[in-house]
Amino acid sequence: MDLPLTLGDLVDSGYQPRTIREEIRANVFARIRSNTPIIEGMVGYEDTVLPELERALVIGHDIILLGERGQGKTRIIRSIRHLLDEWIPVVEGSPLNEDPLRPILPSTIERLKQEGPKTPVAWLAPDARFSEKLATPDTTIADLIGEVDPIKVAEGRYLADADTIHYGLVPRTNRGIFAINELPDLPERIQVGLLNALEERDIQIRGYRIALPLDIVFVASANPEDYTSRGRLITPLKDRFGTQITTHYPGAVDDEIEIMTTQARLGGLAVVVPSPVPQIIATMAQLARHHTSISQHSGVSVRASIAAYEAVAAAAIVRSVRNNETPAAVRVTDIEAALPAFVGKIEVESLDPREGFKVGSALLRQATATVFAQVYGSQDTTAVVEEISQTPLEMSADEPDAAYRALLASYPMLLDFVGSTHPPEELACFADLALEGLVATRRLSRHTMANRVTFGPGRG
Image (cartoon, rainbow, N blue to C red; front, side, top):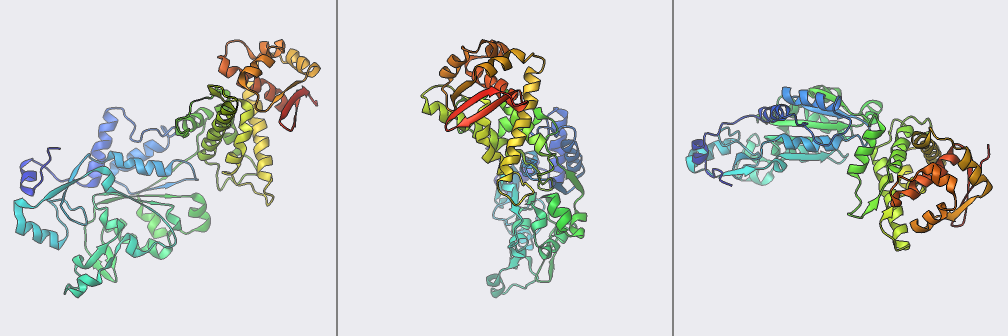
């Protein structure tokens, strides 16, 4: 990097200071002009959250994001750092990232007078200008704002001297972005300590008001359950945030699928996931967000979809390893293996721990019926139902793909119903969808004994 390393070189380079808000505004404008989203990869927020965030950043507001778990609040907060400049100059060794042309600490001002153009300059990248704190009950004012350093006082400095302070996270994020996750969980007395930092941009420690023109953008997240029901976010602090943005879950199945498939971590493992599988998982999540037995205050996080998708892939991979076959290909029946992952991320309003799996199984049946109708809804099921009713189809739950395809060859009506256009590795999945869909719509029955699954006549 060919960057100035002294104050004199910095001045000669033509550098002009600007505030954090001016910096972010200029970078937002640059993205708008290039038709680039201000936050990348936030699916389903193009017409809701992102325009509100864009306006808040342009006008320079501090922001609080309000929404249930798993709605991308933390991801949005962490992505705002990408709107910072690639590098900014600071006085080398300054605890507050002071601009060499706009020092704020008396000691730094004196140092610049003494060292003049030879004052060393360091450069900060965006990651070094972003601080994030999870609000916890044990958080202290010293953590956030700072504390008097007794050693410095013993050296002869006055308590009101800014140089006696060991600064906390907030002032050390000067010229950057300070984020607090789950703000209502911060004790109320600590919330009070943030009032001056947010509004007057100064800090108070041990009763001493230290006038420091801090240049910080504050961003916070909160869950509505804490924010409203518990009432733990004090009104004066809420009032300090310029913009409140309400996040939401994906409104469409396609959005949920895109988030789920891009965010899932499969550890580099190769697995084929035919389209009906993510459709069913995403539909389960959408249905769960309106289910009367599931706590809607807690919400149904997108993490539930992601975890289910990962668990389904794992089930297929285990089967492929057991049968020594490649590639690993997911089937609709594998989604049952995802229920522990999915149910673990929803809150069922029941004291019976088994109720969660009952609700999850019901959601799976309903979602399977929905996707079955979307894929096969226009086809006549009479022939395939009659064929399976007369000759029940029995197979192992871990049936190898080759054996599954060979078994299907003896059911011509089922194969005709499924169609011949699917790739070989996806045929079992679409056959599964047909069978499980007919079970979900009560036209066939399904019995499981040991490791064998039998599809037979329906129960009407």
